[in-house]
Length: 124
Image (tube, rainbow, N blue to C red; front, side, top):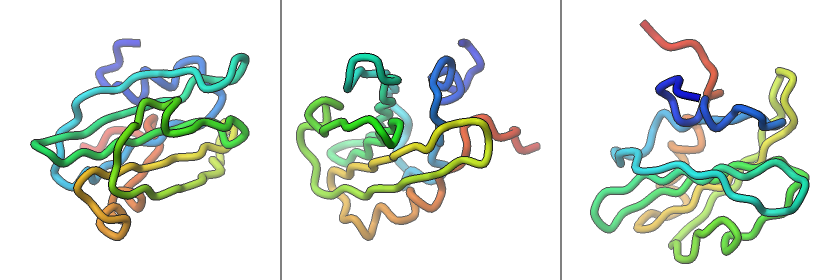
């Protein structure tokens, strides 16, 4: 922990690959949390980007872990986009849900296309 990247820090101890959006539609990062969906499974990641009334919530979990939006703490949203990624590394597949408040599913498409492994090398 303490890498300076909250997604890389969240990866510690998880069996699934962690991905970070590089396009958040201009919304700044506000928080990241780990939450349990099912006893014995890896925790899910819940990251929030927000400005004013608009918000994007990116949730990540192992594809074999069922987790409702209520369990993730996502109680209200106007749209959601689902993505599954099978990493090429040693990690297990990940299910990513991107919830939008004030955005349509089509407007969230650039966020899904910008998902990159959190442990990618930094650009110089």
